[in-house]
Length: 161
Length: 161
Image (cartoon, rainbow over all chains, first blue to last red; front, side, top):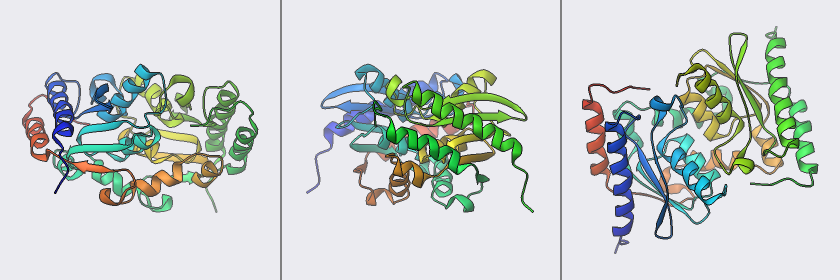
C-alpha cells in the first residue's frame, strides 16, 4: 500500500503550471515551485535568472523568499515545498536553511541535465573535497576571520538561525 | 615558492571587515563577501538572514546579486569572490551558477560549525543520495514536468544560462 498523494499532486501541478506559464512569458528557465503550510500556498516562485539578471533567482529560492516575506520569518519549519524539478544543490541547501520539512519534485536532475541545465554537474563538483574541485579555491587569513566568530559567540544580543 | 597573495588578502580583509561591521549592526550572522572583476570590487554582500527575513540572504548570495544587478548580467564569468568564510553548499552552487572563476575564503566550514552554523551538516546531507537524506524527498508526476522541458528544448527564443 502506498500513500495517497492526490493532494501533493495538486500542489505539484501548480508548480508545473507555473514552470510553463513563466517560461512562455520569457521570464527564465522552465522551473516553478510552491511553498505550502497546512493546506495554504504561502509562496510561489519561478525561474527569473535571465529576466532579472540574478543567477540565484531559481524557482525554489524565489518561492522561499516570497513565503518568508509574507510570513515575516526566516524559518519555514513545518512547511513543504513542491518543485517542478528536483532542486539543484543551491536550492536544496536553501530548503535546509529555511527549515522546510519535506520536498516533492517532478522532473529529475537527469531530466534537467538533458534540457541543458548544470544541476547534476554541480552536485558532483560540490560533493568533492575543496582541493579536488574544478573551481580554484584558496584559504587565507583564517585566524583573522575567526576573531569575528569569537565576537559572534560572545555577542549577547545575537539572533541565531 | 608560493604565490603572492597580497592583493587577494586585501580583498579578503574587506570581506572580513564587512562581516564584523554588519554583525555589530545587527544585520545577521558574521559573514561578508566581495565580488571582484580585475581590480574593481563590483559587489559587496553580508549576511542579512535575520534582519530581512530571508534565509537565502547569505553574504555570497547578496554580493553576487549586487554585482549582477550593477553589471546587468546573469554571468560573472572571469570574476573572483572573496568570502570571510568557506561558502556553504547554497553559496558554492550560486558561485557556480554565476560562473565565478575562483574563490578565496578565510574561516572554514568547521569554524562556522563551531560558531553554531550548519554548513558542514548541510554538505553531508546534500551529498547523500536523495533517498538517503534526512529530509523526506518524493518524486511524483515526472512525465508531466518533462513535457515542459520538451517545450523548452523546442522554444526558438529561449535565453540559455
